[in-house]
Length: 164
Image 1 (cartoon, rainbow, N blue to C red):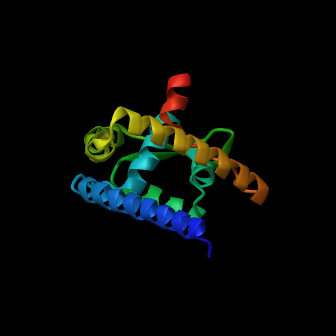
Image 2 (spheres, helix red, strand yellow):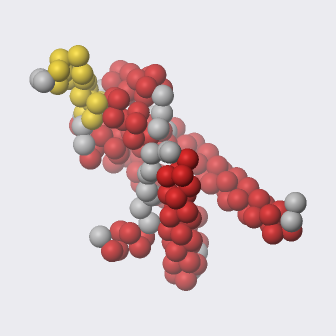
């Protein structure tokens, strides 16, 4: 293996482990509110738009059974409801409840706190460089996903938010 390849592998591995450790910290803090990253992502998604479980599974690239189990837990804890769709009563629309919105209001500051302590430790120049790097890597991944026949999914960056 070439020295450049070794360096790139080490950099990718370090990034992966750092993100994993951040997620572990976030999950630990969220658990104190009865939440998790997975549940929080699902509630944030549903806060924007009620959806069918098949659409949720497709969006998050998860197996339908995994999504059903997550929705079951959220429904048992009154954080979401399922209701029939008039056009097709076999289909259920999953909607966030007021209790689900309340959980978001409690959990998001915990998530934001970890993000602020980690990413907030970077200078403005480092944040801008990181944003550019993420945007670049996202474009490369889009191309690789297209070549591999994957469904593309773009991650918003600071630049994308500022441009929109």
